Image 1 (cartoon, chains in turn purple, green):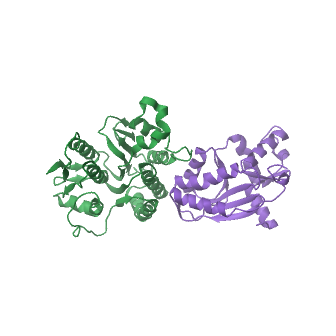
Image 2 (tube, one colour):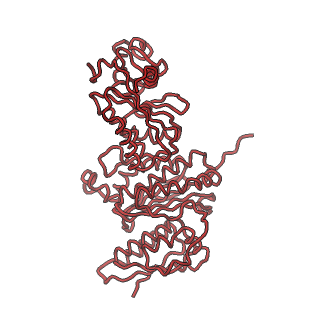
Length: 194
Length: 304
């Protein structure tokens, strides 16, 4: 048993949160975050929440902190079951500065997707982690061995990097494989766990 | 009996400093509290900062004397008209002892944002909503900023107004206007003024940071901590990023931001201005007074 999940053998359940137009001020952000967290209460097993930014016309720094950074922080704080993952989708150029800034203040990172579907790793993560994250993103899923030698010298080194990405909730471990959050969402949608 | 403070004929940042100084003089020492009359008859020009500043000084005068100050109207019709268009009198009624407001309504204003009180987060939402369309027109057509600047300006407005609620522990005001800044720039500028008369940066940050600075703790060190280092009164690391974000954005626009609090002022100074980045020893004044100037972009000619 690792992380309370049977060797990470369980596909996550999917939760969806669609954010709305004007995300400004801390109380607004707090209310939005609590709404998202409330929706997860009582859900057993790992949950991957897709947070949709397509309809967000504006987000200020306070709201970015209250919503994105605090959700990311809570996901890391939750070390036992059930694990929480977040994939922030529909991100436009004007969302990036507040979100990046809020994450960096807390030394956090998130997996995001631009409005055209391009994956992006936002916040604080060094090159050592960004390379395997990007590769798994391209492949959808990968084993440690498949990252040698492009991202790591040995399989053990690659496993450590992937485990770190999983621990930071930027990838998801499923048995011996590691999945990008998008691949996990697609696999779940195909496998039908919602 | 009233004591009279003459409102400077040019009511801008310097005019505000004169008002602050005159008020300190009129309310110093142990005197019987007397009503103060602000004589604005000779005012010839007012900036958004000066207009909000007059309200702030009036509010402090009221607090120091316990009596609502009086205010005489400017004689110049264009100044009177500007004050009316900026909703000055509606806001002044809560601060000054004024005659009836029945004749002071006005039609559509050309201001980006009329003088607006900030008392709650709901007010911040209203302000951001209100400027949305006007900001798009002004920033794109008049200042030649790229389209995303409208959102960036709204974010800045939201953060700077929230600063009042989060740190002042009191009410504040905001207003914004564009005009042609002939003397200093020879270009159009957007000027945003935000003020409160609350506890100021020194008071707000004291509990969390004063001990670390020891004897050096002052308005100036508090401003440096907040403006340059993103420190906040809260231990939460997510707090304090608003002002830093504003500074970054203003820098990208080659603009200027000044924050006056207590007896100090800190600024991000662009090449086109020559003020000191940090001024100390000013006449103490409560709260925080923020001025942001965004100059029109100079379009680079495309080489033939």
